[in-house]
Length: 284
Image 1: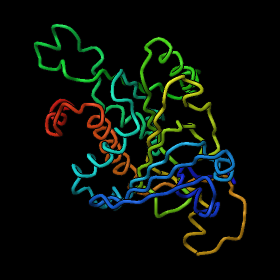
Image 2 (image 1 turned 90 degrees about the vertical axis):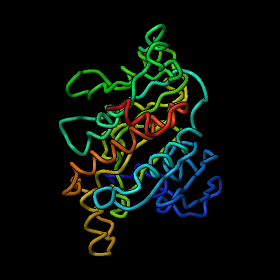
Image 3 (image 1 turned 180 degrees about the horizontal axis):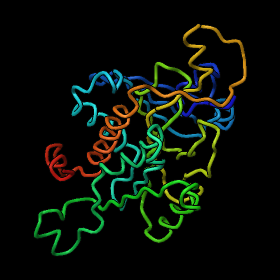
Image 4 (image 1 turned 120 degrees about the vertical axis):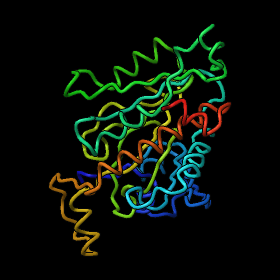
């Protein structure tokens, strides 16, 4: 099918949940339901169409309908992200996507919310009281159609030159279920394959291609038209997807709120020496 899913929880459901080599644990954290899935065998990875690794989903009320308790949600996602990262070392944050296409703009918009600190050093850091901040670099490399350069090539070059201890890559995701659209955040230590959910596969960003751990983050912003029809009519006729994708009417609001949530979650996970309120002031 043209539009697959970027969500491991959906792949698990459609492949059949009793698969050897897959373990799942769930937790209710305030307004978010957390699901932690580990794919530990090659056979399970092939059945799910996902690389081995840990996949964490945080699901709550739709971002377009509810943005209360945002501090609680940010800190919950930050906790899950922190557990996937090395405790020390430079971090490179990549915002993947096209700013001119709203459903695909989540990565760059999230990156714009992340506090870049690698340049704050020496006397400047000491005099401003920012010497406690972890070194973070942030970039949105654009898309192949505008730059002529694969995102993987840009990130590989940066990783080679900067030697980060880990990369965080943020991208918009595709879902196979309307119930996950705009209300689910996925984190994974298996990296990310830009465009895979809409049939536009680009070279993967993972530990094999970059030589360091790669944490993928994203929120579903599109579903296929066939998925939409099947959810509405409760019927699966096995028809092929014509290549059409659908996005919510409130996509501008969805991407803005999702970007804020992801960006601030990254800040809170990386800058453990700062309070939530201090980070909000620094990002301003």
